[in-house]
Length: 247
Image 1 (cartoon, one colour):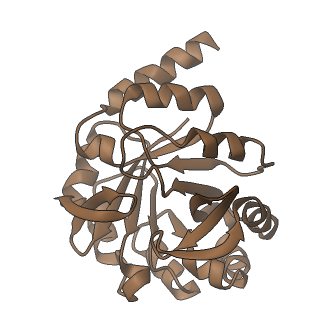
Image 2: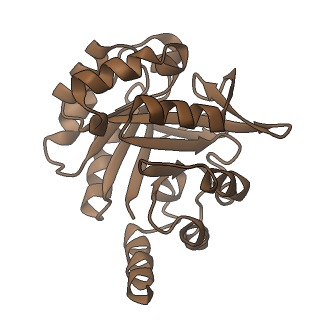
């Protein structure tokens, strides 16, 4: 079980909103990354929140600064549109790259990336929301529908090949009211062959206890709860230790 600090970044600031809206500045990415590293987080997830929407440059300069003194896996996403972008991210110090919009537009990018960089370096990022009775994939930071179902898309990307899948609940993101249990239960019934990361809704340590009951061995990417000091990383570590000792 991995605990991942998620930093959504706009320009030079870590930002956070609710359901991807109403974004407000939280702090500087280099400083917050160092803080979470010192507190014992397992990984960092850096997501450029506007790179895809406005075709801006990625976080390459920030990655270089962060990884100078941090020695845990770092994953970067947002605005990754080509093999060149992936190569630049990895050369900047990232260990993994998360891709969403570009492979929804053209899944051949995922296949090319796997052949060039290996599946272990690739995280497929999925933004999902329930419409009627269907879990639908969104792109461009939760703004645009794709018409693709979560089930079909997860099957498709696993068939092509990736190292991990990051699932973000648009409905729960930033709310701090708990994970989307309906979504977790749905994903639980999908056959998966790669590690999963869930994001969106964590606000209290009890929410993590609920998550462990459904997914005892998967990862959580946490943003608001860390940024607002609602949960301490050491609390999560203690919870996981207790779970392991009781297993």
